[in-house]
Length: 308
Ligand SMILES: NC(=O)c1ccc[n+]([C@@H]2O[C@H](COP(=O)([O-])OP(=O)(O)OC[C@H]3O[C@@H](n4cnc5c(N)ncnc54)[C@H](O)[C@@H]3O)[C@@H](O)[C@H]2O)c1
Ligand SMILES: O=P(O)(O)OC[C@H](O)CO
Image (cartoon, rainbow, N blue to C red; front, side, top):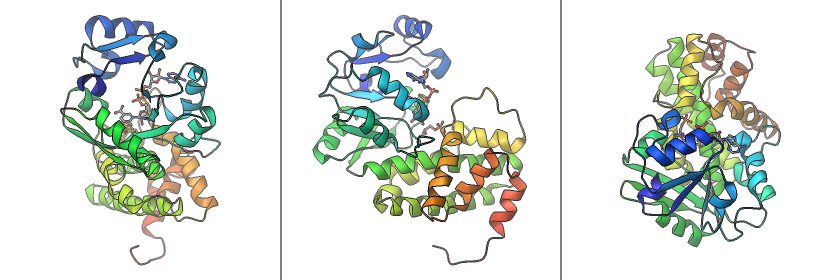
């Protein structure tokens, strides 16, 4: 929707024939975006070759755990000259790879960029004001992509800190589960603020250890997306946490990337001796190893320390 609103010829590849037919005929995507009117310029197809033929830029909007498989199937169809913009927020289970690292393995000769920041799909599709960050190691390409993607209500900042942008996007989902679980369990807004703030300290620590820039973590793709995702039931990760906290059935829920990212993020922190007790608690909670009450009690009773 954002590229079409900015006047670009926008083609969408999807596997679901019914969704493609409805999108082309009614300019809506009822299953994901309700009755929002999408720009008429979007043309959808189940024919990946036709969609990707001659594409200048490719946006990869596949869940993080399916990114390797999804792009592997399409890799011979993606034009060599087209930068691939990753929109997924997560760390690959099993390998611990960031999405850019996954894609560097699948498409080693392509320019890779990552688009992240506080942006609910429904808000963007409605044309509500949104600001995000695009990262690419090549500063000129990052600026060009920011210009291409920006539109009347969509403002895109650029950075060369690909890792920083990806780490913020992946970990805010894990922390949103913690925030939602605390609210769902009835711990209240003060506990929620404490979890988000101390979760942000963990994010800063991890980012520093991975060589990301502090400004990126303080920016839209870090703090910005953390604030959004940890405070709104519109977030699937926050709502997953809410449901967990309330003891509701967790099957058949929409995608919550933090569920898959939490255990691998916790494992990476442990391996690199980075203190991340909230991320570890989310992983343990999701694995059924502890209850929310036990997690909160353990967090609040950790040895006292300086606030760093
Ligand atoms: N929805 C949002 O508000 C939003 C905003 C910013 C970023 N993101 C990120 O974008 C990524 C995707 O999220 P989403 O909201 O589109 O998820 P979604 O579950 O709504 O949709 C994902 C789509 O990918 C398709 N898909 C799954 N596996 C595939 C494969 N192997 N090949 C091709 N297609 C495949 C699914 O059929 C589905 O249509 C996530 O990492 C999410 O964090 C989402
Ligand atoms: O619904 P969520 O939790 O996947 O969040 C969507 C976006 O990442 C918000 O920026």
